[in-house]
Length: 418
Image (cartoon, rainbow, N blue to C red; front, side):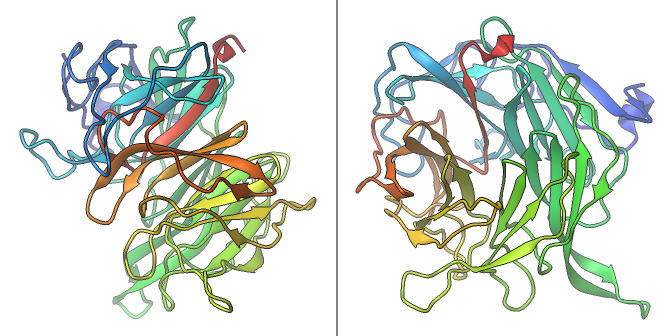
């Protein structure tokens, strides 16, 4: 059994896996790659193991929940970070290979979590359901320490589960780090970034943040990537804004840069027919809770329904996670209307993920004040961007273990045939 895979900058070429178009690796369904339990154990190995019972530790993790009835959708969770098991050595072993899934019933209840085919690489990724497959795009820590963009594709079989993962590695390394990863229907985006040793023009180095955007088209049928192309620039240099692509528009909110370090800005870019970002347009600042204040946020989670954008959690300028939730209506030109504060999260969460299905919004894991969370939170969307008066912390099954920074994809059941 393969327990781990690490590719140095030349290993792919030596193995004959790389061409001018990238590197392709194949991992069949059920072959486990990474740390964690064996099949039939704790839901962290291969096959159809199940996570039931108490909720995997982390903030609140009571597990709770009920198994849904007739399932209408399936949620996949991959990548991110977990607390390092004590028996696993190595500085990056908190990075996650495991892919977990759970079914959702018509009432929106998420049931038991099971394991699917693990990803062959770890890192910062976004994931979505595109053309009958799970597609992911991001930066793999196993390849030059996040400096090579990577795309994954796994077709969904008749059972609705990912089969073999095909991995395509970008042969053009990144010249600076902390690029924010975004995935849209046509491909992947890298926004902003940071270098602590950028040439200053006088023979020395300096710290620099970047406002750039790059786009790479991803073939939905094969997962292969085109060469990266530069797009429009953001309104200010920064790293790690909260991001979302919706209906041909790319949104970027908050982030971190030079003074002031934690950003409050809201901006958007209309994508052209090929998916390339145009010029970014500023939309003002996130409002604070108090009148005439602003809200600096690093990497809030963004999700949307048909009418509103939702901003969930993130990291405050104090360095602590946020429990704030805001919403803003979409305008006909792709811009956003006024932001309003909604029902707070039951616990502060940074590096979390949210998604919307029907009239409910879900939040998956995240980094709490002192520990990661395993909870799957849920709230009703009551109309006009408003949420219910309280978040449900017990109806949905908790994740198999506490996890932050994960990628989440929602797949309608039966969609694998599309």
